[in-house]
Length: 85
Image (cartoon, rainbow, N blue to C red; front, side, top):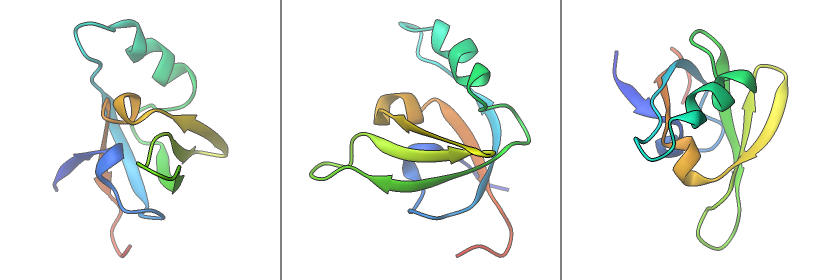
């Protein structure tokens, strides 16, 4: 199974969160991202990206929807769900 980061997914590509890896400069992002639902095993999907530039991203995790900056989305490790295109 290939692990990607949330920012690298195509829109509407279903995935499962495998973990959170914040940058050394912002270790508090780990707890914050987990608190809002990015915990291992949770389903997630990028729903849309702002234009131009694609930042921020509209992301669904579980039953909640959030806007994440691309730099925050790079912290969320995911695997693709089987059978999704």
